[in-house]
Image 1 (cartoon, helix red, strand yellow):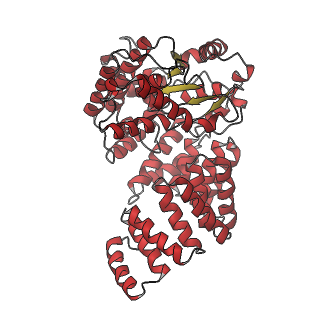
Image 2 (cartoon, helix red, strand yellow; image 1 turned 90 degrees about the horizontal axis):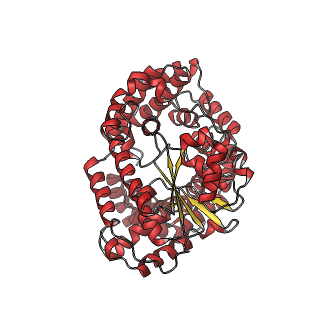
Image 3 (tube, one colour; image 1 turned 30 degrees about the horizontal axis):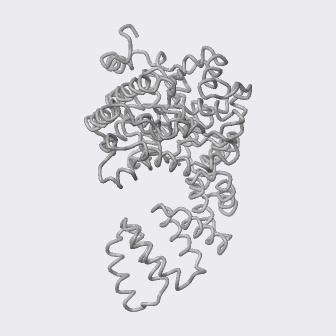
Length: 507
């Protein structure tokens, strides 16, 4: 297994089990081998058998907890991981795995405690240190996060994850020494593609900090091209998806059973890097609103309904009745109820929801939808400069980016025409020019009384899980336009946006 030969390991372990059928350790190793081979159900079966033989084995609890968590059995996985920490409180790996699972589950305060325990036990545990820095950033403790990452880099100057985490805060500036170090690491022969990609995006950010924009663009283009080779994205499939959604929602929806259903919900729809985290931060600064961040409930419910009907969304939309939409809306409210325990309203800013506005308002006709928009050129550039943790496969090629933006723009127009009372265009550049006026308009649309806390959104203490988590702790900036800095490097992108009708001819 240490040589990554899981199949051969499995064969040997089968022989070991024949010789020692009651061995919990053999069962545990069989579970690990199955995990390495990607067979999670088999792994869980072996690990549960091992746990039955020795329920107080911390390593078995930890391994089973990870396997359960990865397959979506979140509560059971967390219980096993917590049990591992109780059984082996001096084991850094147990606290790290528990902390990472808590972090992924958005239980960020608990994750901080667990990850801090791991780092206290093993000061040089870099994976735990990097995860703790991310959690501290989410919680707004930026200075502590920076200190941890800088110390990690003093211990391990070639740690690509720590470099990337530092650059991904957006608010920490790199110096010329950082640029020299990053350039050497980026060009080092023999490093993995994953590390080179992380270092490339970080080096580009460091070069920007030194105002070397032309070189920064060349580096980020190289990193994007490398990342794109590892991903699948098909423009024609995305166009077909947008066509299908536009067609399905071109006919009137059935009259809702309850026109007020969902009045607690504000959907913030957007493209990545378009100011949506700022929009949510403004709304979540209001005493009546809880910021839900990127909630998965809407796409999950639509996927489950597609499975129930045996056809993909949106093919089943024309057959959906008012009762069907009402049922789905009540399911959404049930799944998001925890965000309304302290405050009556919630925001949901999942970046995929721009395509599902028709379904969202059919399910929840009382909801409000805020479309957080930014200049197309700035949006595309910002997405291209960002390495995303998961998804967003269209962002690593500028042609893909323009195509995706075109589909978003098309459906935005449809939703604006179809739902004029429930759909609001919130323009990032207009907010920069007139913060108070735009914030008052936003609150009025969301049926919220004005509250001065929304003007001082950067002072609002809340967990923010997106890459903008450090940026929204700062006052509103009016100097965020970056396209002019890149000059002719962006001419091909400008031309593509003009051809798509997304930029005026002289822009």
